[in-house]
Image 1 (tube, one colour):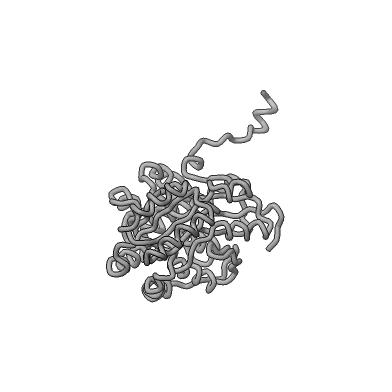
Image 2: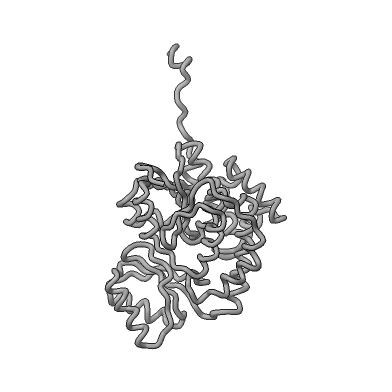
Length: 319
């Protein structure tokens, strides 16, 4: 696939989303209402009610709501922004939405996957890898990152680079007991420590999670051949089969997200526009995205904004 000037849909990695920020969209937008109805029927509960009452930023209900909203925003963008993606991709959590939008999974199965994987993840980390977290940080170029990791090696501290968001923006998984030292050392290197993620993801150490997710979640689903290719957030590969999309979802447990490589793959294939369909404070905003693509953020606020209609020709003729 090489189409100069083509567009891609980016389904962002999940961040904290307040119910109040998306409630109006979920209740009134026709694309969202349809998907909320599918979620209610698939899961056997009211998604809106459970999401409203849920504690924590990454509850099962928050995750399903994020998926539903991303998919609804993609359909809204197609209907209102003339957005027709040549490919789609989704860093981290966004791969679930990409799997559905591509046609590899039905909406119902994507919703089922999201809810059951959330439970699987909680159960796994309740038993395994106690005390591991993921620290994100910016303003640390590759040479400084290498220096930092060498220091951890010398101290005998296990760690893993689990996400590269930009050339100086990374996520490192390690023991929570070492985060205070890490944050201090990052500042000493001129870096900026950001948020800590619990539970961690995207490390080869979590092969047990991959096996558990395959047995308990993924292998129960049917993956079709996608009508829209999916680009891997791990290595930029173009995925054109249902089995490849299935493996992408499982590999998210154990493989690092490499956003610069994924975006480089888009550039090589002629993509020049990104529609980031979902609430995003990260992947569509970093320089590796904004300096190389025309980026349109498609969020609930944009979708709910009143849109001007073209003038009626008859009215224009008699005015």
